[in-house]
Length: 297
Length: 192
Image 1: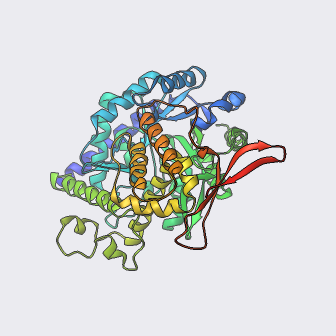
Image 2 (image 1 turned 120 degrees about the horizontal axis):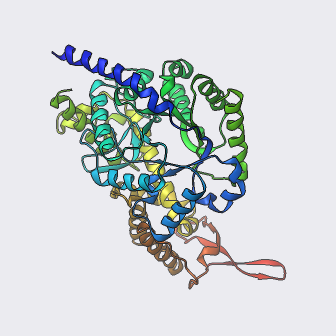
Image 3 (image 1 turned 45 degrees about the horizontal axis):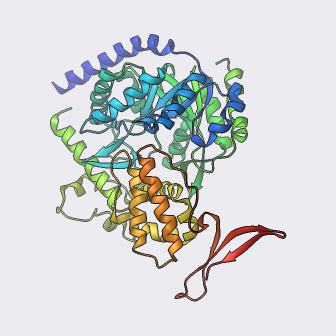
């Protein structure tokens, strides 16, 4: 009986995968943009011509004050915006927080993005908000939980959803799939796109000892919608996804591999600590834009 | 997936959330399995659910979480953190295990609770407490997505340049700050 259910799930997965291409392929190409941070607000319009779109943290605009509300309107009037959630906690076995999904939906409704995003992770369990993206074991049980939660989310939010791979500080011995297979199944079984964080892929590969390029080439290329990249740092011999430094050459190399491999719709540069003047980040944006151009994306 | 598998995953997530948040700020133990409660027999079933995880990975995750909280709080209490200088890390690591913030405004609550806790810990001069009071008040408003501006402070704590610790452990640190611009540049004043 169990085997029959598993086989049926695989068939459904394949059927969904075929149908999905049309939705994902029809998404607009946005180019290269920036993860919006309020520190850049004043400088933003001086570089308007070189920023194709912004990714906003949806959580910052839940129940906004008049000032935040005006900021959101101003950004929306001037640039395409992609809302990026931090705490949907789609991997929570106890289900979604309906209030959080509703607030996310309100932001999506205001900015009408081509797609929205969150993470393959859980942030909440047993009434505790961990405040950090926590990895899931790569098992059939996790896939099922993700499937149920994504369905519940899509019942409320109709905008296409893409999910991001996270840096995994914890690996589970009970894993039934490797990274590529798990990410592929999450996308295929739920008919969603992948927000591939190139830095996270690189960091996981170094910290956990696997080859990032071989994982990349086993991902479903037609589901990679958007990329994130950022610089990290090494601490006690391990890479940390700190978003605190210029992008390292190894990550640029991997980004080029990804762009060669997949027809991505957008790339976002992230910087959360040691935030420099926007002009400094523009060099990285221009380099990413030239990579897109070089490979005809 | 059976209900039992989902329930096991749920329990494992609860156990992980508890472990990561309860161990914040605790110093690294030579016996990490004990630090993370992984050697307990069966006092909590949760321990079984985490017993196959690498304790050093749990330790690193807890440290990452702690660093994140410390950095978020520092960004919300910049004047206080500058005044505390090197002592900030020490104080925050002592505070962190006593409280874990919850909910949508967790980062502001964390900063406010740290401020309340700090007021009971330091014997710093009254102007530090003034700075703290202002920054906590600002956090209260910002958590409701309102931004407030301060026009005037009783003490120029926003201009504190550095803290100089005395070589003698019992002696209070001295603070240096800019006070006014004179003919030879900024004139620096020292706290007593």
